[in-house]
Amino acid sequence: MECKKENFNPKSASILALGLGWFPKTPGGLERYVYELTHQLAACQDQIELCGIGLPETDLNLPIKLTNLAYPDTAIWQRLWSIRTNFKKTRIRKPDAINLHFALYSFPIMDILPQNIPITFNFHGPWASESEQEIVTNKLSINVKRWLIEQKTYNRCDRFIVLSKAFGNILHQQYQVPWEKINIIPGGVNIHRFQPNLSQQEARQQLGWPDNRQILFTSRRLVSRMGIDKLLQALAIIKPKINDVWLAIAGRGYMQDLLQQQAKELGLEDRVKFLGFLPDEQLPIAYQAADLTVMPSQSFEGFGLAIVESLACGTPVLCTPVGGMPEILTQFSPDLITTSTEASAIAEKLENILLGELLIPSRQACRQYAVTHYDWSLIAQKVRHVLLA
Image (cartoon, rainbow, N blue to C red; front, side):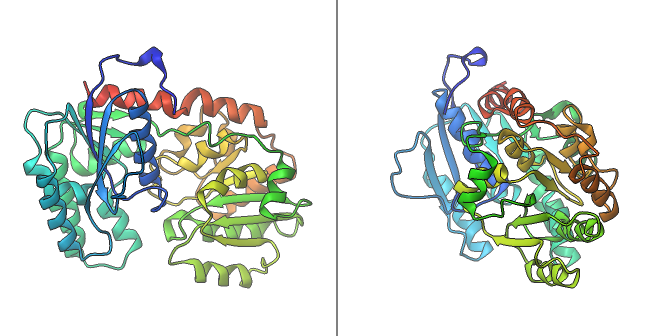
């Protein structure tokens, strides 16, 4: 980890963060974000304590202090009670700032947080709305999540960080948070882990991917709002004109069987590979092996971490006009944003790119854009400024 000194306040601070699970044991965008942020802050000599669920309890010789509050495999009511009880037990001194990342696990401790310490909530998405879209659940459960847990938690916070203007609008409109409390700071990418250090051929050899085809890559949870079904439909649309395309899909989720059946019905068995869980160390290799990363999200994409990861590895990205994703690509290559979320719009762009009718940015240009705008060491200092303001 590297601290960018030009924006660094030399006075170190004590920051208490409450996250979710432990990355990389629990893979996910929120977990990765919290992991990178806390380590970047610690690299600048801040004293960081990260509380969470299922965190390692053995000494890992880390620059941050880990406090496990509960175990993820316990019943939800036991988990919430453990969070409250263990948080009380482990308090020794007041921090200079408090940084919360998930409403459900923040809710049990809101009334016992130290007074007169600024509380910043990183809003990663509308938890209740996402649950409503993805999970078959009753209206009472959704209302409890939205009005009892989320709204009450947000009412107690002093300021907020969102990763895009799109999610700032949701926070303002759905939860009545005033804009003067909302700070827009994009997510970051570890430019040392995600870098173009292999040739495309070397990357493909390491993964055992074909070296004679145009390769598309997407790393997504296999759930409805991620749009993998639309991407498969788009592939079927362009199939008569483009014979050499191959799609690698990394990720797991409840739709995996349905998507595999869809690929079979569309006659794409020899053009689509479901990779399942892709180990984190292989992710930068996969980006480098691909000609294009595709993000076909249909809703609630607050930032699009995979976009900046792919760009940092030198691989351009095609995305739908959803959430915060266009905010990343508009300044860089707006032609890589589809006109809609429909399969036909995705297919049109893919066809133009794969046939060479639409020029895409070079490997060097992708890398430079990511380094200039999304280097985690710079992003962390912007977050730190808000936490300690």
